[in-house]
Length: 117
Length: 115
Image 1 (tube, each protein chain N blue to C red):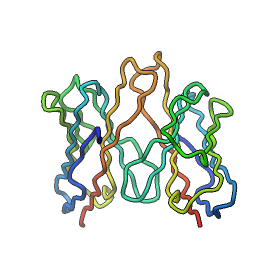
Image 2: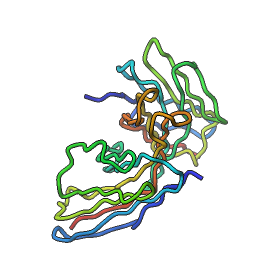
Image 3: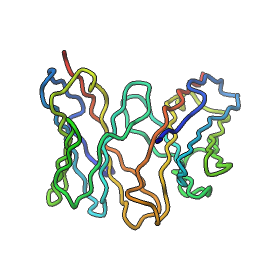
Image 4: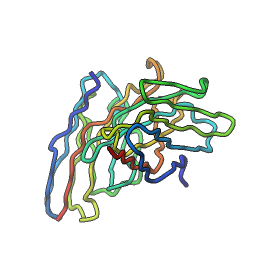
């Protein structure tokens, strides 16, 4: 099973709202990723967690706040977003670590379509 | 600076034809090259991947050709079908010896297969 689940599928929020995106995987992966994808563009890396520690932050504005409560869950907390933040937000996971079997293939979830009004 | 260059941006192929998408990279430290397929409103799905120690990998109608000296790789879709209409992304990563396989994506190719 290579399934990554994301909730909600769609989210509409105002610029003053606070909301959270959730991601879950049960593949025993120790690396989890947040990407932002605009229409007709490739996914753009935002954050990476490795063994529940923030490993990469691609200079993302502080209105996006990631959280990794445990090895299976990844959240993205949203606050005071701008209309230009409207996009498809993708979560991915991979085995991670040096002792993994094979390449560190990333498996993506279906995404959350976010609209900021 | 874009680490992986992909062409063409869009491709229209007749049903039964061959679709070819090309990618090039500069960083010789890259050692893992996956291709992802993405349908509208869905997340990217791994299609096929290759390491530079082989020159070709085939899975069903999908083949990756790899030219290490030219630092180029390509995806060939044989007998293209309307259901193959999607956006295809090539990617590259430094995999061996890395704790994370961070992906560098090409800009994507929108493939349309006409019935």
